[in-house]
Image (cartoon, rainbow, N blue to C red):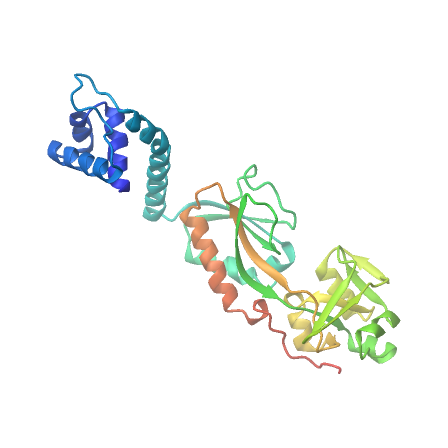
Length: 304
């Protein structure tokens, strides 16, 4: 029915069936037949047949007013998609958090550029949620769902958070057996996380640390923990190598902190280009192949 509606819009704009047929390179009987089919489907006349000049019925005027803009939007989107499909090239502006982008996801950006050499990737590292429309950002990668209703979002994966410390710290200060014993330890906090919420099976515990050291950078907090300065609750994606090498070990290994959900985000009011769509699918495929970004925690020399 859409094709017949689009034809009707063309008839109105060409002010006649014959002119529309010529403009669309269709046979005049075909245009007449399709208009009649649309009118039969709607149960009303859209155009006065007997008028010497082109004239819409009241129903025709209402139908045109309701669907003309939608037909334009559909045609515009179809043309844009056709252009994008014919050539996967051009600038793609992406915003993503610094730590995860220069860390575990760095190979993903390189692989995307290799696979799509004609796409000019403009990667902007930031943890702030910028005005995507104003800055013309095509796609953003963010931790956690965004409350803005003007944004479309797709969940790509999640990261576990765990309590860790250096073996040297635990040898000197002891190893907590239950969450309540965290109060007896030096805590390295990553702002803005004033409360630690830990879970184990069906149990939950809340811990409000009095921070010995507080920073707003996860990489720096993990380095402080590896230096033996205290305990820290950190996303596994930032400490994979430290856990695997034993520089950091898990504390309360059966407990985990809040999951950090990974989302692809783009403006909902804008047609997603083929470049941005390709990146979204590429990120989803790449992240699905990384166990750490699906909640896994690597083995380490855990202290129970």
